[in-house]
Amino acid sequence: MPGREILNAETVLALGVIIALLARSRSATGDRTARRTGLAARDALAVASLFAVIVAVYWSASRMPFVSDDYVLANLARLSSGNYSIPFTRGGGDGFFRPLGYISLGWTWPWADLDPVRWHAAALTLHCVNSALVYLLARSIDNLRPWAWFAGALFAVNGAHPESVAWIAGRFDLLAAFFSLIALISFIRLWETGALAWGIASAIAMAAGILSKESAYALPLMMAIYPASRPGLQKHGLKLLAPFFLLAAALFGYRWTLQGGIGGYAGMFALHPLSLANALLLRLWAILFFPVNWSANVTAPVVIAAIACAAAWIALAWASRGSRPRLLLPLGLTLAAAIPPVGQLLIGADLEKSRVLYLPSAGFCLFVAAAAQMAAPKVRVGAAVAILVFQLTALRHNLAIWENVAAKSKAVCEAAIACSNPESVSGLPRTIDGVYFFANGFPECVRFEQAQRPEIAAHSCSLAWDTQSRKLREQK
Picture 1: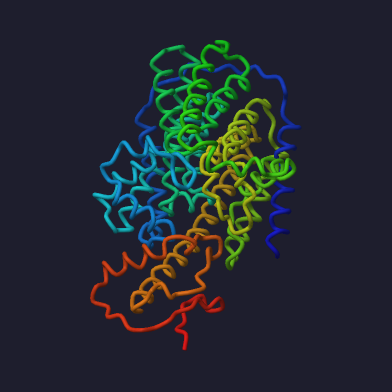
Picture 2: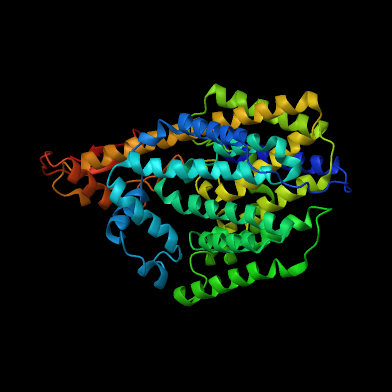
């Protein structure tokens, strides 16, 4: 089935489920926020189980070679390791201002060097921590507390995450989500208790998130959504929200000064309003509901799991009864998190650029947990399992594509270093099946392979990419 038709079908189902869930829920509620309890031993066990799941699922991908920008960023980390002033005082050459992201890469270099396994281990560690933070975020919302592990597990095995977790360039998304989740959890505690310490922690985390990637600029809006969608909470007025909006404005002003403008996200303002609406209201949900890379061969288990997932969503939409604000909170968090990268949200069937969904997917996982929690007991467990199994199946399918393309990347560079003039290699594609190939990073890749394989003797040759075999061929 062509990719566009698949995306259309996914969009119709996703939007239909959301509308049905909202229509069948009640607008009024008697819910009130209960006093939070401290963490217990079972929370440590829950987090440990999330870590174990992530390691098991990503184990094979953790050993895959570098891909595309991985080579560029590893080289940049080598050059910038130990330098903390330049990232904060100069705008990025790519139009983005992400000083903490680049500093974190510099910190990784002395330990990881040119070892892809260690670079992937660093990414997996961040993803493990972020999954635990999603668990804690769900646990901080009284209605979702019984389903907190499910929300964390759904985030851990989300099919849209390979580009963020398996690609070194995804470090910025991992860091931004890490600080954003801490900021949001701290803000919820601030709103409930009024304790200044929580406000300071939230502000520091928000600033760190914004300095990691622009997606964290969504935080003030995400914070505002929490009290707006939670009836029964004590209203503290704008005095608690205003400092966060002012902090975001100050950081944006500093960024503007360094970049001489908005920088890398300027393209979003060139999009037609219909394209923006399509991105936020349609495509976003299609990819979150069904994050499958349809550009490569899709096996029967993936198709079966997708059908079971669709049936599970229909069952949830039919069997759910409850308070509408329970759904509006995670839906609002998802939409708010998707606003900064909205210009990149028109993701196709190959899932290219799906890394921008890393933070929005946290809100989506809370939404799935809320929908399951509101369903009839006979439906909720089976539907939740079907959705979780589908996400896991889609993740393994998508990761296999990344592993395959990474192997091709290494093979290309190994072939190129055997030529006395590697720059003569021609025709390398920008992407393969939605995975970044050599739009960037080929010269760095060749140098890295030469450093690791000095015994290979070069000879005169000319290589070109064969699109049918997806291999380099020597030109006669």
